[in-house]
Image (cartoon, rainbow, N blue to C red; front, side, top):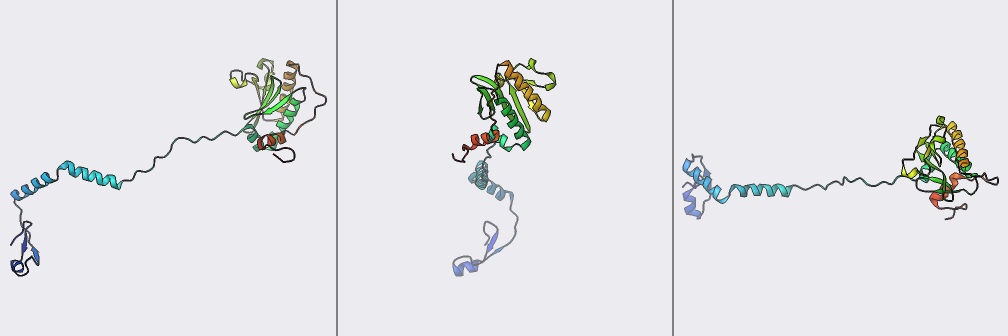
Length: 222
C-alpha cells in the first residue's frame, strides 16, 4: 500500500501488529495535479504575509539592541588662575611674584584672586590684573593703548567687555618684557595719581595663591 507521500507500507505487518511496523521508501513522480494541490494548501494555510511576519519576528527576537552611546560631551571645567599658577614653572612664578610686589608698592592697594585673575585695585579703581595662559604671564593695565610705547607691542583689549577697565595687554615671556611691565605699571600709577608707600613690605605671592586654593593659614590650619 502506498501512502500520500509515496511510501510503501508492509500490509502484512499492519494485519499482524495493527500498525505499520516498517516503511520503505520508493521514489516516484508527482504529477502536476498533486503539486498544484499541495501549493494551494500551502497558500491557504500559510499566506505569504504570515510567513514574512514569522521570519521578521524571529529576526527581532535574535537581535539585541546595543545601548546608544551618549555623544554629548561631558563638561570639564577650565583650570582657575590659582591652579594654573601653581602648575607653572619656576620662571613664570618668579615673574609673577616680582611684578605683583612691584605693583602693590603703591598706597591703599588691595589684591584679590578670582577664578581668572589676580586683580590689584584701589577701592573701585581697577589698577592692574594678572593672568596666566600656558607659559605666558599676562598683564592688563588701566590705561589707554595710545599712551604706551609701540616697541612694547601691547594689545588693545577695549573691545572685550571683560577688559573694559584694564584694556592694555602686555604679554610677558622674557626678562625684557618684565622691564617693560614695570615701566607701564609706573606710568599707569602716575596717570591715576597713586603714591608709593615707603613702608611697603613684599609678600610671598605664591604662598597667597596656595592659601587661596587650599584655604590654609600660615600654620597650615584651615
